[in-house]
Image 1 (cartoon, protein in one colour):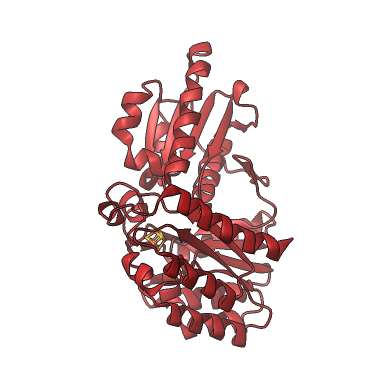
Image 2 (image 1 turned 135 degrees about the vertical axis):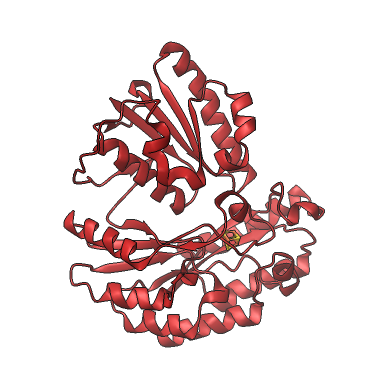
Length: 360
Ligand code: SF4
């Protein structure tokens, strides 16, 4: 029995896909890259931007022909689109066998057990995986927080993944131990707001210190950090833990205080630049990457100039730039999407040129 798994979106989805793959592999299924030969197809979807959602819909639409050819084929749809638009998916694609909400993935085996032949699990050594075109080249992802409670005004994550929950320390250490027993030595800690991790009194710095002491671990990464939680304690811990990454992804989103406030990001450009200064002073060789959204409601050329300015001052090594797209039920959805598409495109092109010139 073979399965094909397509992952859209962020590293959290990649980690969730890894989890589902492992469950299926341990129950005797084989992972295949040829979709036409699969007995099970899983679409792990993303809804963070309109474009991602459209890609997921188009992929699911294409599965109809495969289902017509092979009535025994099982199709499962999960991830953030499943959470946000379950009823719409059911109506539009009645051939989907199971819709699994993003928050239900940990019960994956239980949910699909009546649809497929799941024999009792026999844990196997997990081979390096390839998930939906993403090649795992060494690091293994460990989710340490689930959900998000920040409610950035443009973001659907808190709505589809629920409030932030930190996993207990013992569960994380058990995952690390298991990976080490499989010969892995590099891990990346994952969370929508990874640096706000807190389980009782045990916080993100304590976790890094604990992991740094494990001799078999060689490299410890983490993503995604929120600037509001990048405390002095965390910066000092990164500086003192030699195995912890010197590459930090710290989304700024905008350089304009007016836009940051409307985005509900809970920091100012001055505070952000102060954090960058501390990171650079205390962690020699640190490389900071970022995310930027252009064309947020009311963004003027002056606001955009502030974004260009913060890019120059922060000295990012890389940026993931996006055009704002309104997402239903978010706070920003009620704001007028008043920046014309032509202006969003032009600002995005200007940003991309800066980073292209930097890396070329
Ligand atoms: S921190 Fe903001 S942008 Fe990131 S997942 Fe949470 S709400 Fe969304």
